[in-house]
Image (cartoon, rainbow, N blue to C red; front, side, top):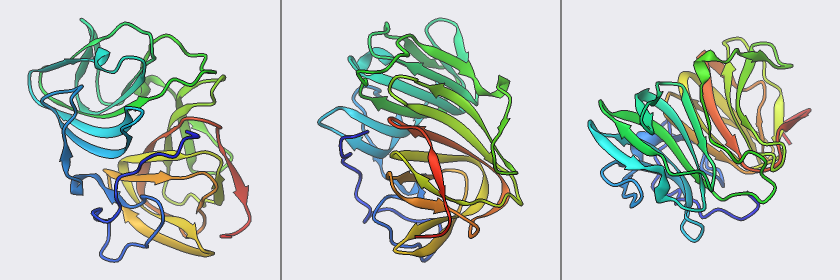
Length: 260
């Protein structure tokens, strides 16, 4: 995401504790504290907006679909769509059922999918610009529960890759943090947004040379710009935490020695 995103105002965000650190980017956001917004492309849903760029028609949301809801992915022509199911069921087309943990990437140019939720569902929903170097140009639909957790170079930290585009560098993945994991300080190399699917932890951000942390519970959201240091020994995982994360350009992080 090389273009600067028009982020939602931080002034109205309620953080996860009484005295959250003041940061120049939206960290420590409780999704339930956000106001509902109207989405013309998905009428009849209850949507919480994380960030958006109206000029590009892009954005990311948490959406509650009511019982007996139906719509279409074709309402966003020329843009790609990502969906991750948090609860309930979402049906794509006639018979592709996504349960909790289900993921779908619907690239620009793919035929519009009918979307249906018979009993209601809660999903993460993102609309992206199409990167000219993207190589994934066909729909990608999978059940993350069927993917094995892969260890990383940090004990107690593992991940599942949901989408990795070798052309654009776009990456969507799940990270699992186990209690007792000793995190190093990490420098993000790309703009990243994450949503805490399960678990609880105190997560640290490095700002102005100081480690500041706050408690996250399921539903916590963070948008972290590139070149921000985070993690580190000040982070404490209280219950096994699972993050859903997305980047739209260069992949990865690098390790740094301290909070600088």
